[in-house]
Image (tube, rainbow, N blue to C red; front, side, top):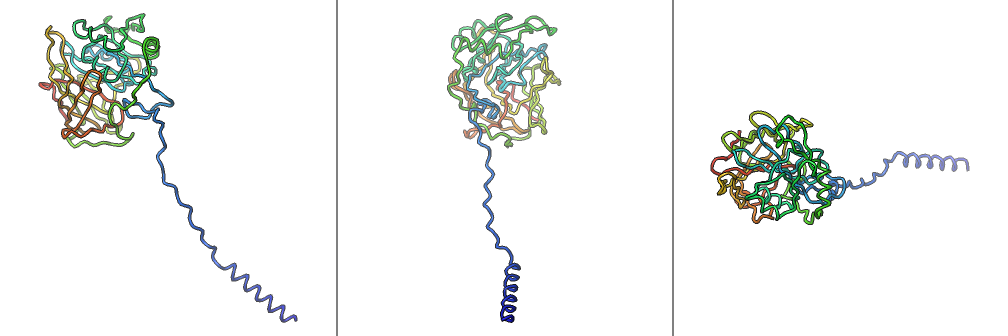
Length: 341
């Protein structure tokens, strides 16, 4: 009997040892989920830049402000670094004036200096369904056109204030974003009924390279003495505005103006019949799109006053722009073709 139990015990030990020496059965790996891009709130999209830059819902009309670009006043400018789009074109005297467009004007501390309206800028503001801010106007041409859009003619004490910046009185008028928005809210409908992006934008951070050539330095000559120059910084991917080999800076913050895109729209600029004011036709023409240190020839068109600008390549295909802010120049097709370095 003892031998039987001994043999049985030996068999049991051998059996247990064999089972312990077996490798554990490999379990199938859990399938790995594909990395998904975070779902972005469409209400956070800035339609003027293609950037998702708002924390909550911002479905309000943009604000377009006429900005002084007089040679003496460029370092007294305020708010341009925060603008989503900046338009530049000729006025009388061989100089240019700017119109800065803000999707969220309330967040801009100071905007200025503010100057008078011109006809073409009214059409450009209407193309954004923007509320238009100016100080006075060219009474002969722009004045009658102002009735076609919501606008506020500000002055010191009427949503504006004067700042002692060392310049003559006409170069000292500013407003605050929150102040002007309060005025807009009390006068006009502020809901943005169509939040379709201004242009077709690439994904944020996607680098677009254009086939026309290098554009590390872009010079747009509006007149013999008035040239806007844009210098590309490869590290930031932005163009910094220069004028007469200097960088105009924000009056209060000393911040320079940098943009992701530059667009040059060439058109047949002529004098109005008064021989003083400049007529900027906006029907369409040839131009250039510049981004990421490269450029490409394009075509542009606008349509009626309430239509937005449309940009295409020469073959008619739609341009996809880099996400970010934009500087748009309307320059003479006869003497303002840009140069690239």
